[in-house]
Image (cartoon, rainbow, N blue to C red; front, side, top):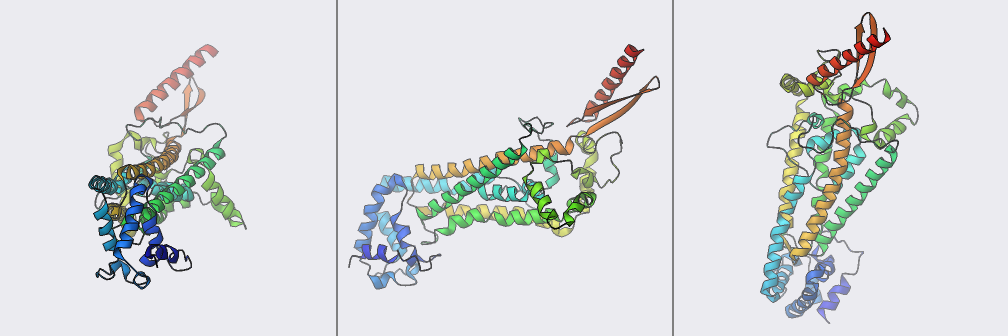
Length: 434
């Protein structure tokens, strides 16, 4: 009996269990390769099967991937045989591909969302946040024992090409934008899963031969820190205060389908089209507004960073200890995922540099696309949070004048200039009327 043909026929029985068992994934492990070196891998593998002279009883051994005896060499001797027959220049190229792949998790992590970003987005659009995290299979971890405050996401960002006072909503196309975001996130998620499947089944891991699910497991591990960060932020002091402040708005959810309708509307509405939630008001612990009553809440926070640093400390003091530590532990989980991914990616054998580079760029492309969607949502949330209406009542010659000014991201100096311009405009109008 030809051992090669018997092996391939035996493993076509898909009714057998396949998870991390060398016997039942042998067909995939040794018959599918990336196209760049497939022309040379197929004859080498067939030659090694014949040279090792493995019979049916040997291949049915449960501990095949651990058996290293001369009579039944096993999977690791198969790897040694293939490496022996590989030309030296191709073996060196494959070794370079392992280095490239080992850098992939850290590269993807540097482009991925942070703990604070996914926490803030999950509080407004949890399903979209989940899809974006699954499509970008990594997490940017903060420093050791550093609390990644989700409210810092709402602060004005430096060195950004976006006008942070604008919501970037095109007319009445919010629903189309929302549908496009879900479409992009789902396509990117399937692309990420497809790349993980291809890497697992089109190469051999020296870490665990016959377990092609290692890459797929790495791409799914990001769900754990995402859930930890989202749940901890949901039960934080700021979100609890926000729910209390909007309890009258949620009374409509008491009917039979009210909760589902309200949740669906909150999920499918882009952040730029939502009303203000005044997260920063809850951060400082003030219930009645800022010290300057005519300023919208949030503007003083942008204009006076030093004065609000104590508010940040007070905000953290009001949090439960497990909320703070859950946020920190989520960052640790992201770091552990990067380490695990580095070990798995660097153990992949029999893949060329070009194929490795193409897979990494596919991961990076999916991550950047999801990063763009998340940036748009966070930008809309930031603009809504800081965009208020300043109603300044000015009396000139006993006549009241009213004007509405969109404050956007202005600081105190900008507001003083706006007030001065307003008074001048009202004075000129009064003089003309007189």
